[in-house]
Image (cartoon, rainbow, N blue to C red; front, side, top):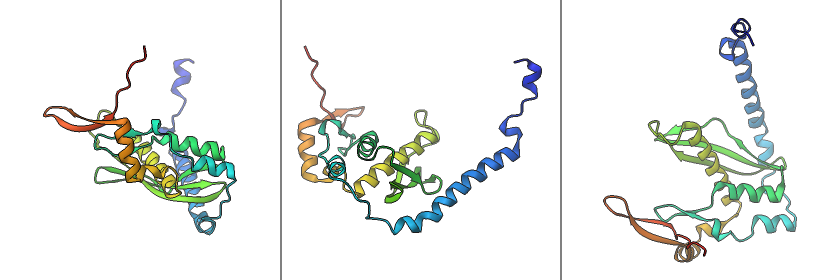
Length: 200
């Protein structure tokens, strides 16, 4: 493409009316979701599951997929919840935002609806710590983190992987898969998964 042709191609920033139409479309989509909420609420708890779907959703958690934070709290990565929902419902589920993410005391807060087969299954607010000076996490990364956290909370509300909040299960998992070590300067006790011994 010649420099002359490049000079006459306007960008979206140069077309305010295009930006306004784009924002208007997003606002209309958000409004359409909000308008359907009363109808969706009336369907809460009415989603019928097959025996196969129940087995997938409420199967015991894969202990080796569990991770642990330095403070000892165990969790499943968001992808484990997404895979379980996808195995049960295919493309018939979605996580829809309720408005835009908000910053509250250095946390990105973002509520979501879990929709299954067009019906409201759960609602939760996800959160993710965010500091503008962070070199490792952008605001969009933090928003994605809040979305992932909302997915986990929606699944928790429906009884998926509840072992993670059962004290006896947590203690047994920590004993089997984790260890507490001194790290940093000054040394501080932190939890981590046990290091797997290399295979010969």
